[in-house]
Structure formats: C-alpha cells, structure tokens
Length: 425
Image 1 (cartoon, helix red, strand yellow):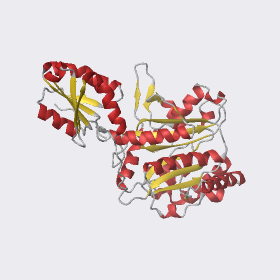
Image 2 (spheres, one colour; image 1 turned 90 degrees about the horizontal axis):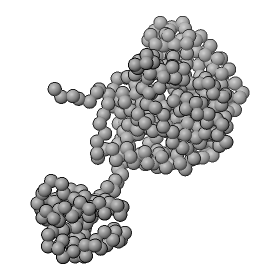
Image 3 (cartoon, helix red, strand yellow; image 1 turned 60 degrees about the vertical axis):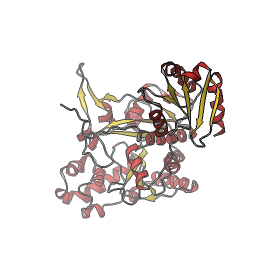
Image 4 (tube, one colour; image 1 turned 90 degrees about the vertical axis):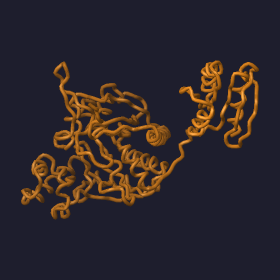
C-alpha cells in the first residue's frame, strides 16, 4: 500500500526550495536592517493561548484549529498564526524589561489551519511575520508597513497595493459596534449562520464574511471612519502622514477589518494586483493589537505586526513573471579513472569543500564519459581529471568548461590553484 502526502500539505523539492530560500534571505536581511531579531516559538501551544489571544468568535478558533489532547490530558493546538505565541513569549520571558524598546522580533515557520485547500492556500503553510511590541508611536505603524513593502519591492514585485483602515480605540469600537448592530439586525436572517452568531458577539466580523460579501447591506454598512473619536482620528492621520513622507502609496478601505479579534487602530493588507493572480488577492495582513499583551498576563503595552504567506508570495512572483538567478553552479567536478585514483578523490573533494568551493565526484562507478556528462548536468565550471598515471606522477588535469582550456598542475598545488582560478571568474 502506498502512503501519500496528507491533503492540504506539500513537498517542497530541490529546484523549488531555492526560491523559498531566496525570499527568506531577502526578508531576513531587511528585518536586520530595521533592527528586528529572530524569535522561534513552539509549533504547538496550549489551546487556551489561541482561544484568548486570537478570539473565540474567529473562524480560526471555531473551525480551523488542529487541537489534540496529549497523554497528560492537556489540550494542545498546532499554531494557526504567529502573533499570539510571540506575545506569550514576550510576557513569559519578561522582554518588557529589556532596556531596548520597543522589542522588535521576526519569525518564519509553519502554521496549521483546517480549511479547504485551494490555489496558494494549504493546511500546513509557512508564514513570515514581524512584531514590534512596546510603542504606541504611530511612526512604528508606518515602519512596519514600510518594512513589508520593502521586502516585496526588493523581491521585484511591482503590482502590489497597500490597503489600510483604522479600527479605532475601545471607545470608538463600542460606538461602531452599536451602529453595526442597528444596521444589520432588521435583516440578519438573510445572512449566513456565522454572521447571525456574530451580530451580538462581534458584529465587525460580519464585514469580513466571504459568503455574504455581495449582500446589499454590506455595501451600505456604516463606515468605522465616521465613528472614530478625536484620539483615534488623529492617530490614523499621523500614520498616513508618515507613509506619505516615506513615499509609500496606499489606499484607505473602511471595510477592512481583518479576521482576528485582537486588532485595533491601524489595520492593513497588501494586495496583489497582478493579472491572473486569482480571486483572493491578499498577500499580507497585519495591524495594531493594543491590549493583547495585558490580556496574556503582561503589562499594558501596545504592539503591531504583520504576517505574510510564503506560498502566496511565490504565487505573486510567478503571476508577475519575475525570474531570478540561482547561482548554484558547481565549481569543480572531479573525474577519476582507476581504483586508487577514485579512493584519492574522496579526500580531494573534501579539501575543495573545506576551502569554500562547491565540489562533487562520482559515486556510481561510472566511466569517464558518463562522469563528464554528470559534470555538464551540474554546470561545473571546472572538471579535474585524475587517473592512475597522474596519481603516480603527483599531477592532475584541470579543464575550464567555458573556454575548453586544459592545464596540468602538481597535485599538491591543485586546491590553491583552483581557488585562484575561481577568484578570477
């Protein structure tokens, strides 16, 4: 019986994984430029963390979490998102006591949600995200958005759009909540069961419904921007002014609410506008979550962050036809003829690698012609040929595969000679 990969997961094979590494390298280097440092949290956490942190009214908690009971009768959950775990670590490890504030962190790893697999969406997927915890300065909001836009720009994406909204502070949200209930209640029976249950618990989540997004009441729903108090309005205007100063274009969408309960004030998404990308255009989502740290048992300090899907990042690059060169060519392939020469190349190849060169040899007992073909497939810059006679004379032949030039040198000078040739390339 054959065993296949579970539905909603994928194998990332050689030839593809290099694209992932390319994006990871870009994102990591930019995070370091912005002074964000890596954090790694467990793949599973106590279920209560996500119930409290993400919110009981979210689809993630209600429908999508992979939850299990361990042998100690504890309820554990494979992490469905990264923020709650990072905030838990921030509190547990007392990072709020670090003299360098805000604490700037980034993470990269697999997340798990039980949802219908579709193009660019998997049940195990990889998120890259950042969190800046400890500042209520609107400039940090602008910095976080600038960081992600910098990542996309550096990767070559052109057809991306930053969309933002303000969800206001607690007082603004209470006023808006009442307005939404008054708007939807008379015809709530026309909406799906999820929206009906959200009406009293979290009516703002109705605006995020995918099933009823074409309903006429969605289009005529009151705007959160009309219910912002003076503080929230001033805060949002300041965020916009900073983005403008940074030369970052953006669009304001009053219906943008995001899917997690912990968001307040700034909420944003980055959308792909590439032709043929698909119906779901969101590449990245994020926002401010003042109050989440105290909810996790820490001090009342604010935070803001974002996360993007690596899978959707790659899909956007493909949609825009972005090509990139992965210089993974082999520096040297060592061809051996005869048993003694073959044995000698084991250490010879190791010496090349120790000297910082990409080297390979034959492990299939192939003839000389087949070894040369292997070198061609690996796009070797040089081929070194060592036979029994050369070994006895302490010599080896080096062939430049681009020019065809061949040179015989002393075997004990081979590594250093090849290293110098590589520097000249």
